[in-house]
Structure formats: structure tokens, C-alpha cells
Image 1 (cartoon, protein in one colour):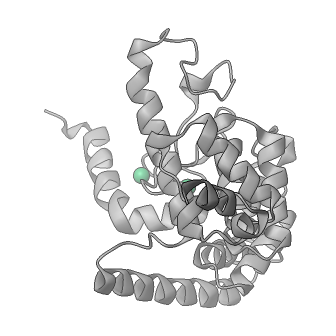
Image 2: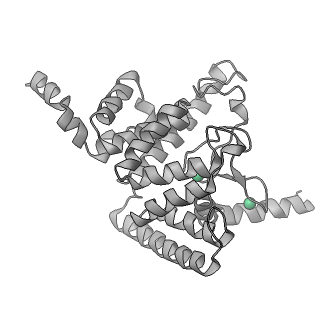
Image 3: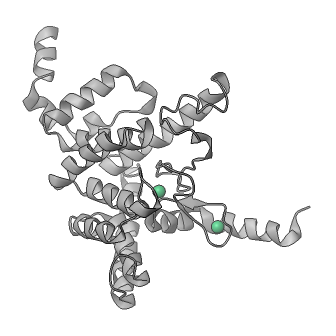
Length: 270
Ligand SMILES: [Zn+2]
Ligand SMILES: [Zn+2]
């Protein structure tokens, strides 16, 4: 019975249809076996697994090329969070240098993700139109998209409240939760490993200590090179992978923190 179950569970048809929740692993249980399971689901064509493993490889394991390839496979299958993830990579030139930033490609990917109903992509697109970043400037159209995104965010918050949980069944949220937990675990491990040598993060950057996490507490993306992320232009102490994260964190937390930082910077510390 147990063997039969294992055989069934390993069947490509089952793996290809595993639900988002089945591939949404937690960082605390990451292992070679977990990695193998995701790889097999991805190889069987499971888009949730392609996206999840793509994010883990790109950001946590530092395997940029294979991470992007997996995200591209999920995106080609119409996975909205993967399209948006690739947009963030192109906007920032993640995994490459400053010269690899490609806002036009980012806007095109965001537009496809927004069309599929992805709200952060809709917000990002609104900011791009307002700023003329990667698209011809159209402030009115940008504002319209931002209002639309804000309404969708509000609806998502109230429906999550009704259900008593915060978007846990969403692919983007599951990958973000993994990354947030991953960085918390690796930073907790650091004192036990050789300090200053990049620790156990596995990202392979020589200056991994200098790389910052996105300040939006639920994002989990980390810089792939120094000073990659945009900074809060007011306090300079918060870093964001995207305008969408910046706007969400402003509403959630930074509005209060940024004010306090300014007050202290003005010489009011005691
Ligand atoms: Zn972010
Ligand atoms: Zn600030």
C-alpha cells in the first residue's frame, strides 16, 4: 500500500498536477530530497513548481541562470507571478550589472502579468507610466492603474481577513514566505559559521554581507549585487526591489518608521 502510494505520488501525471500548496515548501525543511521533489515536479511541467524552484534557485541558492530559465518556463505557461518576477529581474538587471537593466522588457512583462490579474504588476505598471520608465509617460493612465491596484489590494486584505489568513494560497506569497524564512535562518546560522566569509548563504557572492533584503517584510528578495535596490529617497535607510514593494511597505510600516528616522536625523536624538 505504502509502496503503491509512493509509486503513484512519483508518477509524472501526479507531479505535473500537484497543487500550489503541495510545492509551497518551508525553508526550515529544505533538503536535497525537497529540491529533488521540486525538480521532478518542474520537469513534469508543473508551473507552480517551476516558479517556486525558480525563485529559490535565483535568490536563495544563487543559481541565476537555472532560476531564470525555470521562471521563464512558468511565465511561458501563463504563470502571472513568474511574469512579474521576471519583470523585477529585468527592471533591476538582477544577476547582472547596472547595464543589464531593461525597463522596456520589464514593462512588457508587467503588462502581461497585470492582464492576468497580478496586482503588484498592475501597480508597477502604473508607476512606470507615471514616471515614463520603460514606457511613454502618461500620468493620467498611470494614476488610473494605481487607483485600480489600490482597490484590488484593499479587496484582497479584507477577503484575507474574512478567511483569517493572509494570501497563503497564492504562489507569490508562498515563495516570498520561503525566502523570508531562508534569510532569517541563514542570518541566525552565521555566528556559528566563519563570520565574514559569506557564511552558509550559498549565494556565492564574495560580498554577500553587503547585499540587502527588500525592506518590504513579506517580499524576501535580496540584492544580487551591491546597491541594486532602490532606496527610500526620504530617509535612505529602506531598500526596495520594486516600486510595488515600496508602496506596499509605505502603507504597512514605513510611513511611521520613515518619519521617526527623519526626526532623529534632524538632531532630535537624545
Ligand atoms: Zn520587494
Ligand atoms: Zn524612508
